[in-house]
Every structure is written in structure tokens, then in C-alpha cells.
Image 1 (tube, rainbow, N blue to C red):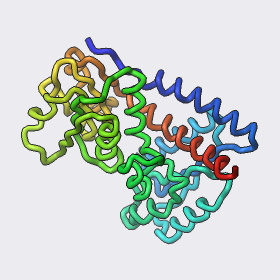
Image 2: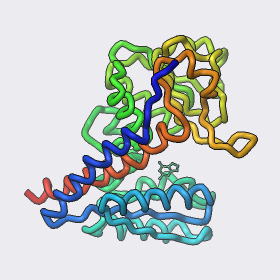
Image 3: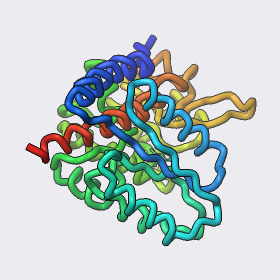
Image 4: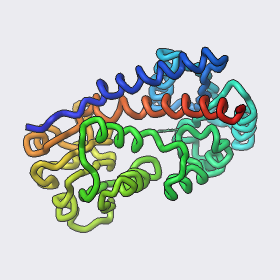
Length: 285
Ligand code: GUN
């Protein structure tokens, strides 16, 4: 029987401390502000954006939604970002991905000022993260690190195996674990004999985007299993990348879906936004 890592509860604890920082900022005359840009009407993106806005409002962060039609030209989107870069009341800028195909995501992300890149996706943020310098960390892997910390999972010398190599989760996840002295192995869709790698994991991070893909066949007894996936199964039920019923009996710790990693992503977005607002006060000194 694994210990269930409760992301909802841990996220709530962290949100409480962020809310305290929001109050302190207000006492110093600063309302932390996040701008979210949504292009087109992808239903999943609309839900994510709505949740981000609700979470901001719940803890007193100002949130502004800029909703643009699907056919928006890249140049126009870049102009919106440049305006937000210069606004003093906006401390974080998030462009919801994916963008329509005619827009170059790399150009868009690179236009966000690194000082306001609360997603941690810009080349400057990623470079700083690689070098272990102070920067905004991408919210999902940052949230996983908090889950591991709050659950008392030791990382130094442990073998962490990542399944998935996306820019948003897999790649940065490995870096953050490496910085805490884990030994890191990356696996992906072209990896041959995946279970031979995942079976070696003390800490297994599933970020593949395939429902119930990781089964007990992939997991070493007493491993810590972190499920980053959010998928719908054949009955339209929300499930992770890990077959929870199959894996839970052999893991030492496991995150559920929903209620594991999911709530942490928005929590760390709030964290980064408040950090950014606090940074402006430091700069004024
Ligand atoms: N689309 C899916 N996840 C994310 C995220 O964390 N940030 C942004 N901007 N878009 C996403």
C-alpha cells in the first residue's frame, strides 16, 4: 500500500503562504498581476485559463484575460506581449499553449520579458535553470519538486527515471532532479525495452500523455511514482499516465489523478507571479 501524495492538500498549504505574501505586497502598495493570453477557442485551453484566473482571484492576485481570435496574426500577438512587458501593473505574462499553427511559438515565447516569464519557458529562463541560476522555474516540474519535498522523499543519490522529454515537463524535470543530486535517466517514445529502464527507478516520473501507460510491469517495488499525465480513458474518465490500481500496491508513494500533480501547476504559477511582484520591490530599493 503506497502513501498517497495529496497534491490538493499540499497545494492548498502553499497557496496559503502565497496569499500571505499577496497581503504583504498590498500593504506596500503593490497588487500582483497576471496577464493570460488565449488565442482561439481550444476547449481544454479555455478550461485551463478559467482555472488559472479563478485561482488568482481566490488569493487576491489581479488577473487579466486577453482573448484573441484564432486568425490573429503573429505580429499582432507580439504587439500585445510587448505592451504587457511595459505595464507596471502586470508582473506575469502567460501565453496559453498550444497556439494556432500559423503562429511561431518560439517567437512568441522569446518575446515575453524574462522578468515576467512566470511559465519559465523562454530561452533565457531555460538557460538560467540549466545553469542553476535564480529564475522562474516551469510550473509543473517545480510543482513536482514541491510534492517530493513536502512528502519527505530523499533525492540525493537516488535514480530518477523520466518517461517523456517535452520542453514543458520531461526535460526541465530531469534538470531539477539533477540539481538535487539525483542520478537521472531520460526515456522516451524511441526508447527500446522501456521497462528495463523504469524498473531501475527509485523515483519514476510519468509524463508521456498516454492513459494508463505505466503498469506494475514498469515499476520497482517501493518506488516513488509521480504521474504528470492528464488523459481521458475510453469511458471519458480523467486518468493519468499510470495505471493507478495496478501500480499503487507496489509503490512506496504515488500521486493520484486528479488531485496529484494537477493542482500544483497552478499553485506554482501563483508562486512565480507573486515572486515577480516582489522582485519589482527589490529593484526599487
Ligand atoms: N499548455 C499546457 N500546459 C501549459 C502551461 O503550463 N503553460 C502554458 N502557457 N500553456 C500550457
